[in-house]
Length: 618
Image 1 (cartoon, rainbow, N blue to C red):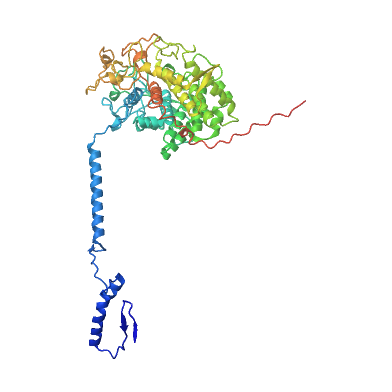
Image 2 (cartoon, rainbow, N blue to C red):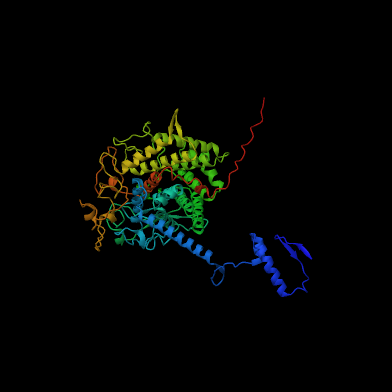
């Protein structure tokens, strides 16, 4: 049988069983010559040659996985290349010189603030902490209260602060000082932190409040007396006391009497304000804050139940820190009690028109608008204006709060040089105490209030306020505060810094017992220290941060140790200075007031609707 050869020749198909191998071989030889005479395509070649040889791939055994050697080599190469590039970039970054942006140096107000706080370290009484950082001070008056023979119930009165250049602990101005410091921390904690002084100022406040909790039965709900003073200020001679003697506090060996009072509303309300404001400062320490609030409530109840002035019947208090009334402390203390507790009964009392009238809110006077350790009305008005600006409690408080707001605006106008409420020295110092001695303590309080009120307006998106028909920006208020503090720091006719340790020219004969007597292991007797009091040389110890009493109304100043009207510092004065300095320090745009912390205990306000009008009668 023949079939067609697809390769171009005849092909005979024989029976597979009948054909021999020789025949097949012979036939193939014949066919091959014809087939190979034409080129073969790939398919045809594959039929003849079969599968070709393939190159064997190489692998790398990594133990847990087997990968292609080619992939392995590329992977390792890429890793090495990436490491080389990263190292090269790092080398360039490290070797190329860079221009570091250094933080700006602290401004004068921040530097002065850090120094002013040191004064409180120098005034500490009792067993001092290791970090007190005043080398010439040591433990002192460790028997306060224990050796008292007046029958005082409280026997542990160690601690607290000495008031000024002596070793007396006057609780009335000290409580005001602690309240002012707490207020400044509540408003400007971010600025304190930026200055690196937040922990320091809180330690100062706690040293004061810990002591105040010893001056009455702070665990009770009702008390019948509190301690008003430790020490005695009689200068007539006779028995040794804290004014007659000129001794280092560490060397005091005479008995220090304790003065108590059972009807002292002004002192108790001020101490309540100190504890209440501090409870907000320490709100993150809940047990301590709660303890302060309870103590403040106990003092407040005592102040309201047993009316009277603490300086009545006390010769020292009447002589050195006489209280003119207690109504302003009710407004001031009631406001702080409200902020500390959120209890609206305190706000109702603090904003009651009758109480405001008793406190002198509507009749003015020569000292109207002057915040001091005696007159707290202006501070209370600013605090309640804050409430109106940010929370607007409405009825029934709005009428009095609006009045306080208007009066605060008028007070701020009176600070400006365009008005004649207060005279100024030729050097520009405002005479808030009308030419009387020791003016600086009033000036610093006004500088604090002016800066604070301007910050309130800024936070409320209000560019300024009206003085009559004229509108003034908040910058004007800040400028007033700056010029007054700059005067204190040395921009005055005498080129004298009234803050000890600030600048190159400051008082060297500060009226201060501890600073004027050397720490030389010699114990000077009560009158043995007179030689240091009367010496013409500078104090052997520099009491850094002390703001002295200040110049007279002619910008004159006598750096004489025995003239306390010029050279004596006080707790209350320094507290106002610290508050003013922290308010002015740092970048105004970066660090603003803390709007909310003071309201942390205040519940959401839902103003009560005013009563409906009386029925119309024809």
